[in-house]
Image (cartoon, rainbow, N blue to C red; front, side):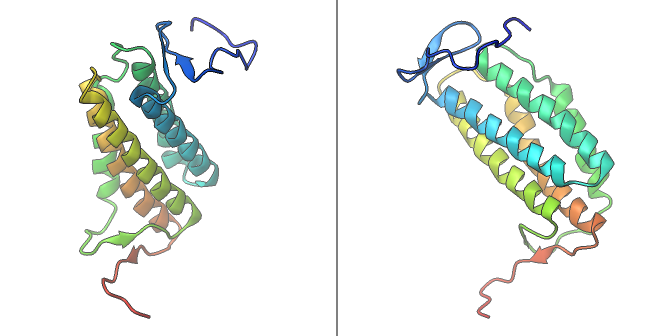
Length: 183
């Protein structure tokens, strides 16, 4: 790792710009910085999830995912970097397949909720979807590692499955959507 922060504030961003890893400066309102911010929010959301999750194997996976999210941010902070290899997506897909075998097939949509950990997992899923949208928008104008786009798409699917797994581990049924309910 190149630079260590010995001082948290630098004053270099006081005029609405921020530095990328390659030394270039961009506006804080740029799409690239919005992507990095969405990933930062996602990582914080996963951190909250980890603090409420009592399933050791899920927590181990979530911690790995937090490292991957930092790698995603590294890809965006250093334009042209490819820290997210195809193998990361393969790992997520294997975990999806593994956990999904423990669940009954869905015949209805489910509402986010259930246990506290499952609820936070759904929140991470929605933040992940937004980060994916931001990254997809950035890819329309600038080069983005295609493996990163595939990875983040699978990651939101994994959060959905993990939310169901966490409810199952806590013996809390998923809440099924009832269209047009008027109670």
